[in-house]
Amino acid sequence: MRRTVRSPIRSSFQKKLMSAFLMVGVLPLLVCVLLILNVFRFSLQSSSEANAESQLKAMTAGLGERLEACGQVLETLGGNRSVGAALENRAGRDTRIYNALYDTAAPLLRDADFSLYDREGELLYTTGSGGVERLEVNWGLLFAAREEGDVVCRDISPYDGVAGGGLRLARVITRGDQVAGYAVAQVGQEQLERLFEGKYPAGSDVLVLNPRWNEVYASPTLQDEGLAARLRGRLLDGIPLAQAGEGYTYHVLEEEGSGFWLALRQPQPLADWVLRLFYLAVGVSLLLCVLVCLRASVSFSRQLFRPIRSLNNAMAAVEGGELGVRVEVHGTDEIGQLSGRFNRMSQRLKENLEESIRQQQELGEAQIRMMQAQLNPHFLYNTLDTLKWLGKIHQAPEVSVIAADLADILRQSISAGEFDTLGEELGLLERYVEIQRLRFPGKFEYETRVEGELLDALVPKLMLQPLVENAIIHGFEDGSHGYIRLSARQRGGELELTVEDDGCGMSRESMERFLARREPESGRHYGLYNVDAILRLHYGPDSGLRFLPPEGGKGTCIRVCLPIRRREEEGL
Image 1 (cartoon, rainbow, N blue to C red):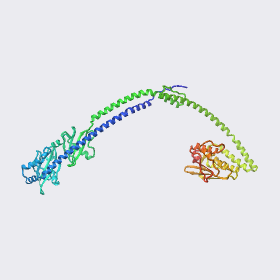
Image 2 (cartoon, rainbow, N blue to C red):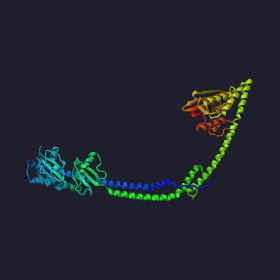
Image 3 (cartoon, rainbow, N blue to C red):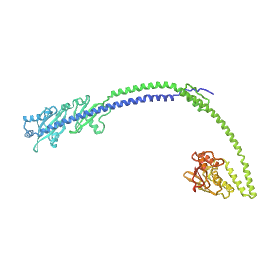
Image 4 (cartoon, helix red, strand yellow):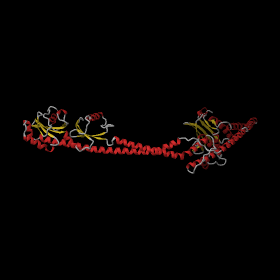
């Protein structure tokens, strides 16, 4: 029968095909775009951070140089004896003191205001208009200068009456062991603005913070009065200075000489609107890629899916038992070749099934003939029984024993089942040995060493008799006298059976032939080959006979290792 199978289109293959196209087309694009975007952001961020660090270092160095220069002016004033004498005597409005003050501070007159105060903190001389008429000497800047005896720097307190804040430096002036007055330098808001002017980019802002992170100076463009407090709070809480969505980055650096901090705030290198534009471009690109992939997958599936669908349906029909199904072959490509091979395969499968049915019928007939042939040994039983009684009547016990033993062996050999217990096998082996002793009187001695708990272990039927027969027939064929020992012991979970004799042993040629699994020599060792084949059939290819060196160096030693099984475990 020949027919073409057609069924509704299933979408599983098409879905897989579309998924493959999407993965091949979209994923690389997505990965590339995200990689480029991240590299671009990282490059901008790295460049921005490098520039910010460079600018911040330059401004911090400039502030340190300015404070150091002011400190040197104060040191010079403190060492001027005329200045010290004038302050000690509180000489008012001495032109020489003015000249000394202006001459010493001349290089920094635009960068700071310098003033001289008496021991009570009263202003006597100043180079600018921002000097405070009186400074406290019992706390604050002048107190710190008197205690340390060196130049000290503090931020201008809101209580000093100076607008805009700034920095103030002071040094005590002494005459002998007595305080004569104080030299003070003030760097105000305008002077700090000139100091930082042009050193940071437009759109950025600069903060000068004291060691407690309070605001000392803020660039004029900074409109956030609470920024210093927020930065201080983030610092104390151990969180980053910049927060998501704020749109700024912060870089801070300490001026080590004074302990003041400079903070540079600048916009994010990549603005939010630029990021949104990037994401929009990525989304549009991905959408176009998806559309192209869908179009290509639909077009490709029309050419590929239909023959595969027909082949799949035909396979399902064959699986259901319809061996006459065939598929139409279109073209000579791989799909067409696959369809042709399927047709040939299904044809051969049908022929093999018919041949198998024929062989099964022949096997059934052979089994029937074998069952009929099993009726014949009953005649042998009766004949052997007659021989046994004739032996007893005519007082020939050897004939009676041989007949009885042979009957037991024959009965056991054709009994049902493939396994016997080790005890049953040993009993049958005793019958065989008894016959051989009558046949070869005094030729050999037979001994068994068997652990009692192994007698109910299952072994293949008639497995031991060929091993002992090989020892009797071939081991002592040169007419010598010897012994045969059969031992059984448990080693781990295995039954270890050993048959050993001290006869002439197997020839090297026979041993090599047996190990190579070649056909045996005519009339020799057929029993060993049969036992080896049975063991491999039941227990696997590694469970055949093993030949070991005999203890005395003479004879043959054969060992068999079997898993220990019992009838109650096997359900027999």
